[in-house]
Image (cartoon, rainbow, N blue to C red; front, side, top):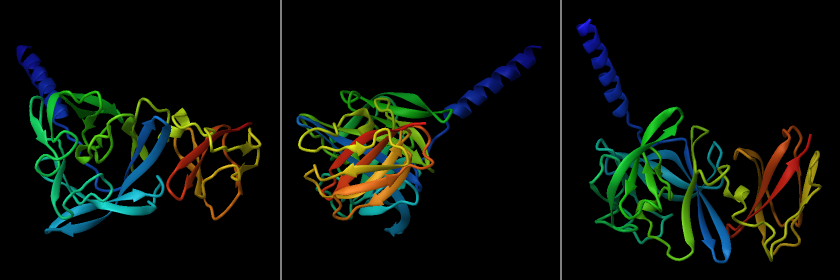
Length: 306
């Protein structure tokens, strides 16, 4: 009987150790980071999406190319090339070039973007020779977050935990490039809104209801001088937007449901009015989002009734 108890205890300890050692590597394909930069005085919000598409060889090592995205659905619509990323055997995430960051950075210099090998009390240097928001991070404690019924390790930092923490296999809650992006002081706030992998939302910022922060009214769609109206609202069959009251030249219209799934995407060319179809949309609240040439975002909610 004692032998059986010992065996059972050993099995439990073994399983616990096996679970605690589970590691989630950084993605190398089919991943999207959706982020915002908010200025609270005056209120404005800029939306940024980054994704991985394709591989490249740098110094005989395989890197995965990061792009700024035109959209947040697969296949990816690529915009600006940001650089290339890789993970080494020591759980360090390397990045070469950073054309989407606030630099300057040596274009061919390998930077440390994240280091997931560390533990509480360790000092983590980021960037190249300690460049970044504070040059280095001191890990205050590690914790975990539940994602897809499994727990991922999180890293919380001394004197910096209020602004961000890191999630294993995802990155910073302040944004993908946060460790090597200087702080904007004053009324600016960087945030990771959601992380999508293989078409599934793995992380959603608890301050938001969906992957698209406009839904939370951080940016008021009818704040002057921009006025946007959906006609009719609720929409039945065909809806329309009057763009003549705005002072922006829009290039794209997108429609999303409350879960952040894109329902429609329309390219715009010098249009003062645009119509969109909502046939086969389930009843509920939707978001129509317009993007201008200078990447200003304007949105309006509308309802699809039964």
